Image (cartoon, rainbow, N blue to C red; front, side, top):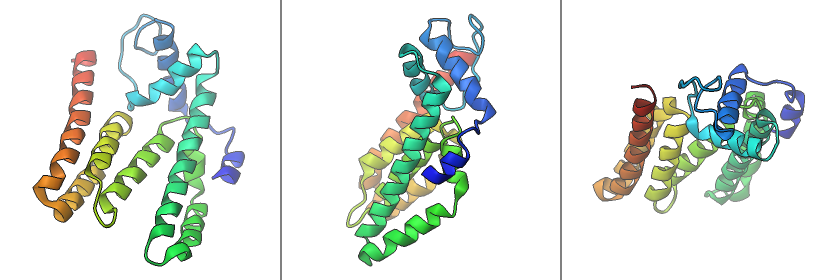
Length: 200
């Protein structure tokens, strides 16, 4: 990811500037909107405002902070995948293959460092998938928490989250599904409430 990010370091997704403006206005007490005093909802993943808010409070450029944190999340996701493969039945033989597969995807590094929530959503999805497929037993609480976070980062990942919940259900039945489903619904429900309160 690092070599590709070096190539794409000057590339910033245009919507990253929107998130940065929202974060700056929120951090400076100017309201939740693109322009000071104008209340509007224009951010797909409200959880991604936190890096920008913290950066503004610390006097750091929120776009730069988002790019660095996004890259860190992308690297963490790649390392998570390689560690998972290392622990599988074929041992360390899979780890280099996982690394090679990731290296063949320059868009991962470029998009994780482009200023949007791609890196954080990638990490959350990686953790969720790992939890659903964990051996010998899946990890329902970890799965539910990751899905709840994805609702606040990338709501369009709902379909893959349903697949992961179905996978958990097929492995553990209703008893195993309950904690994951409860956390998932809490995340999805809270973002619906948030959107409703903001824009009706």
